[in-house]
Length: 158
Image (cartoon, rainbow, N blue to C red; front, side, top):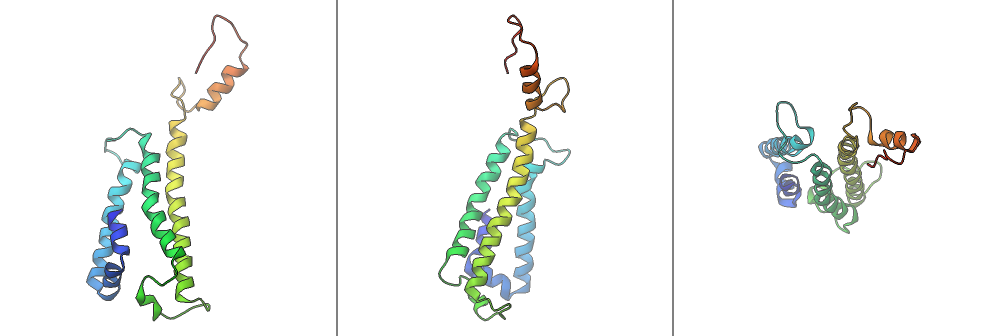
């Protein structure tokens, strides 16, 4: 997150726009930090998890907060944050400030979707109960237990 937020500060952002080498460094740092960020979520083989799996949705939620803050700042700012965009060509009759507001809103939406989908997948897998049949989700076990005739001596509690 520090790499992402750092490159969004106006001086570093402007540096990336002005100098091709710094632009390459910017993108390389995005790639490197992105790989490190997503590694605990994806857990590619042959890696072993360092954290319990239930912490992944919390990790992803916590990661949305700095992105949400930056997105909100861009979307609700009353001035153009990056001065280079003041002189950029205007398309579709949109001002630089309106373009920044749209970019902030789009970034907010995309980051939320990009983090919610894997968090939902991990959560769904976590809520699947390990039974004799690993593909049987917890909900199916609950429904099966509810539809079984009740025997006072063999009541199953989940």
